[in-house]
Image 1 (cartoon, rainbow, N blue to C red):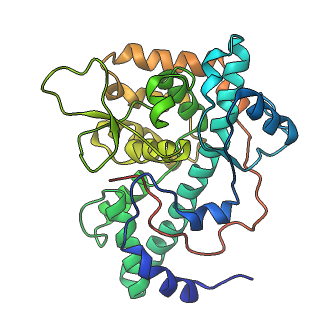
Image 2: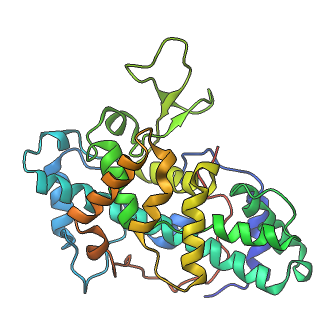
Length: 313
């Protein structure tokens, strides 16, 4: 039964202003997406899960991607000698999670745009408070009465093409087998300087340095933090601008072009961008993922999603 915004908003406001621990999931959003969570101890168990669901790589164009979440990669993934099998397993684990996180972003963007189109001055107090929470969460500073801040919010609050996410994750985590992927579910090489965030000290960290590589409780927490990083950090302003230009032109998001906004992601600069683009091309990710969708059993966008789903910290 559908709930009106007037009914849902007051119930959400009690939790809207209390941010969750950065790498924790938002149970409410996961329930709406109905992700079925699996923990697997081996590659054989992982393959059995996929086989039972009829889920293969590349995915069949006529079949939706099963809404499942594998909590972490099995320890013996590094022992898979067949590189094509290892790649397939890696992509199969990651794709449903990326699609789900992008759907959450799409929900937030949908409702934010609805409110902005309504007119900030015309919003009810609860609606305005929700919008302000989202703006703070996505690091949009300034009053949303300013049209420039409204545009910036929509620029920050958007999806990242799965092809780009999968290519970067594969590159940064050595196909899910790196030390940081195994110990901390960190697939994107994200650092932290905060003592409040759990981290793994790199073995070759120079003396006197205080940074660590972030550790996450699950793969989806790592994906969420990565997406939030691209959507908020000043270093990726170009990526967000390129994406915004595509939206304004009513064009599909082009993963190959958006990779040009990752210049600051690695000290290797242009060489890194070319490598990510090559990984997408060699693995046919843009082609394979052009029309994939996540299996859903609920009707889309029936209620306002919580504003506490980010991985900022």
